[in-house]
Amino acid sequence: MISTADVIASLRARDIENIGHGPLYRRLQTAIKAVIDDGILKVDDALPSERDLANELGISRVTVRNAMRALVEEGVLVQRHGAGTFVAPRVEQALSRLTSFTEDMITRGMKPGAVWIEKTLGHASPEEAMALNLSPGTEVTRLRRLRTANDKPMALEYAVVPRAFLPSPDEVEKSLYDALAKYGKKPERALQRLRAELFDGETAKILGVPDGSAALYIERRSFLANGTPVEFTRSYYRGDSYDFIAEMQVDAR
Ligand code: GLP
Image 1 (spheres, rainbow, N blue to C red):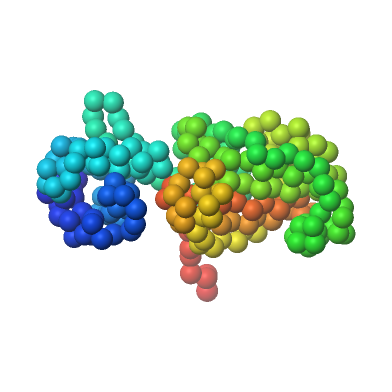
Image 2: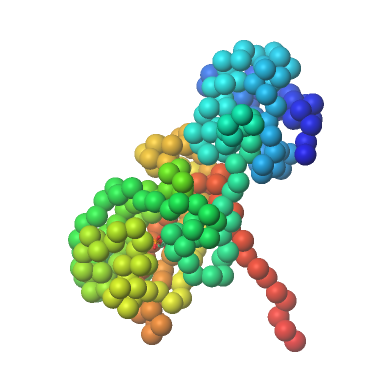
């Protein structure tokens, strides 16, 4: 467990007045995040009290409170009643098991949720047709959802499924994979591509993070047992909440 003095020293070293941009509380917010990203403050570590931070850093308590509140809203910190403010746990997802968002969250003891942004029927764009191995213009079902865990925004997900496998977006209540399973079309294998991006203004707003914060862009194409593509999903996960874990082995000789 890191001491209050060490946290304060790490924050001072980040030169709060000159880090990031915007009002002072935003700069303090950036500095606290940097201390977490650098692994100095770890998951479940307590933050120094509002009073200690204000006194030691020579800034007002209101500034400290605003920075903490913004970090709680971002999901970087959690407030525990009567106990203080702590670094929030990150969600870890294994890269080798094909699981749904709903399963991932339940495994972690969190309540999965979705807020609908779009549910429509349409015709595959050239990119979607290529990803799903369809002729351009084939009918597809589209779902755009904000995925939440314990009501906190986690990812923005845009799934496209051939209509032949999912006749209507209304079939999806909570989980796309559960809906596909009802038709015997739950994916058995998937290819996933990940890359780092920055959230643009609109996506950042939906996810409740500052414009330009780190995102993990994930594209998943999943397939039925016979190799037919069943899903093409583009997701933006919050870079500050997700870890993807891959287990690796040397080749057997
Ligand atoms: C993950 C994947 C998506 C997939 C989704 C299904 O989030 N990245 O490609 O569509 O899980 O989750 P659910 O069945 O909860 O809708």
